[in-house]
Image 1 (cartoon, rainbow, N blue to C red):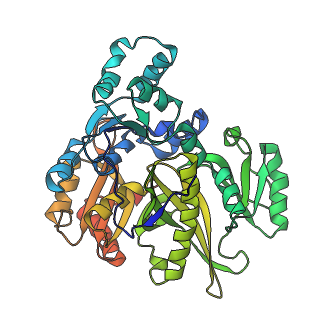
Image 2: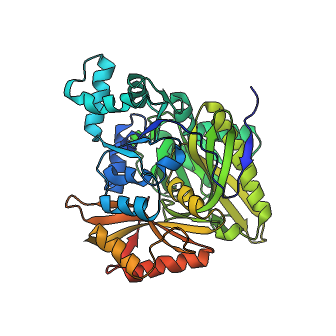
Image 3: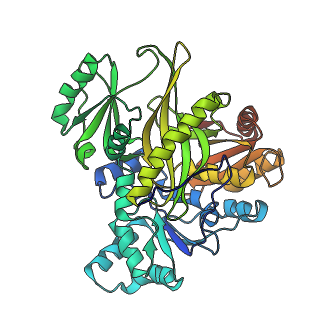
Length: 457
C-alpha cells in the first residue's frame, strides 16, 4: 500500500469532495459504549444536547455538492441561523431533530430486526435522500447500523474511528517511528497506579497524568502528584484496557521554562491523502482542559523551524491515522517545551479523530479569511440572555462580523437553557492579527450587558 500524500495548505481549506451526506451530531456517542465517561461528560459540560449546533455553519462546507442532513438532539436557535444564512451567506444543512434516547431506540429495533413503526419517520427521511455516506463525531456500531438501514456507507470505518482515537496505539507508533514521546508507564488497573507513580518520581517527575486509551474534552485524563497519597482512580479509565501514566512536563521540571499547546488541523480523504490546513494554539485551563483556540500560534509566528517540525510530526501522525481507515476532519495536538537556553522540543500528545472544538472555527475562519488570524472562546453568561439581544448589541456597535469586513465577531453556536434563553456560546473573532482579535474579544465583553466567563469546550 502506497503512503497517502501529505499536502500543507497554510490556511486554505482542503478540496472537500462533494457527497450526499448526513451527520449524526451526538456527543454522547464519543466513548464507544463507556457509559460512565458519557455521563461524566454530560455532567461536566452542560447544555450538551445543543453542542451539535456548532456544525450548522460548516456542514455544507465540509460536504459540498448538495444539502447535507444534520441530525441534532435539540432544535437550534433560529435567530442565529438567520444571521448565518442571510447575513453571512452560508448555506445551511437540512436539520433533523432526534433526541439521544430516540436514536438509541431506533438502533435497538434495527439491531433486533424489528419494524420501526412510529419511529421510522426520521430514518426514512434519511433513506429517501439516497445518501452516499453517514458520519458522526465517531463511527461506532450504532452509526453503522443506521447507515446500513439508509443504504449508505459510513465516511470512516468503525475500526478507523476507534483506533484513530486511541492514545496508546498512537504513542506506540510514534515511538517506533523515532519521534519524541513522553516518559510512559503502562498500568493495567487502579491498584498498579502507586507503583507506576513511584517509577516516574524516581525519574524526577513531581507530577504525572493518567490517560485512558480513549477520552475527550478532558474526560479520561487525571493529573496527580508523584509524592504523597494517591487519589482513587475510577474503573472507567480502564474500559479500553491498560492506561498510560506519563511524566508531566511543565515549567520547573528540569530546565523547562515554558510549555505551549499547538495543534495542527487535518482533513483525511481516501484518494487525495492527508491535508494539513491550519496551525493553531490551544487555549487550556489549569487542568489542561480545552477552552478555545487561536491562530496562528502566537509563540511560533517568528519560529519557522518549529512550525516545520510541527507539520513534519503531524504528517507522521496523519499518515498513521489514514492507514487505520479514518476519514474526515481531525486534529493533532502537541505539547512544546522551551528550555532556559531557548531550545524547543515538540511532542505529539494525541490525535482527535473527529470534528473537534478547533474544526468549527478553523473551517469558518479559513472560509472567510484564509490568511488572517482568528480567536475562538467558549463564553458563559452570568445572566441568561435573549439570542436576538446578543446579536443586536454586537451589531449596533459595528462588531458583528459580515463578509467583506476586515474584522468582527462571529457567533458560531448558542447554548440555551430550558426557557430558551442563552447561557453559553462559542464566539469567533476574526481580524488580520492576533492582537486585533483579542481587542474584538474585549469589545464584545463591553458590548454585552453582562460579564461572561471563559469555559471549557
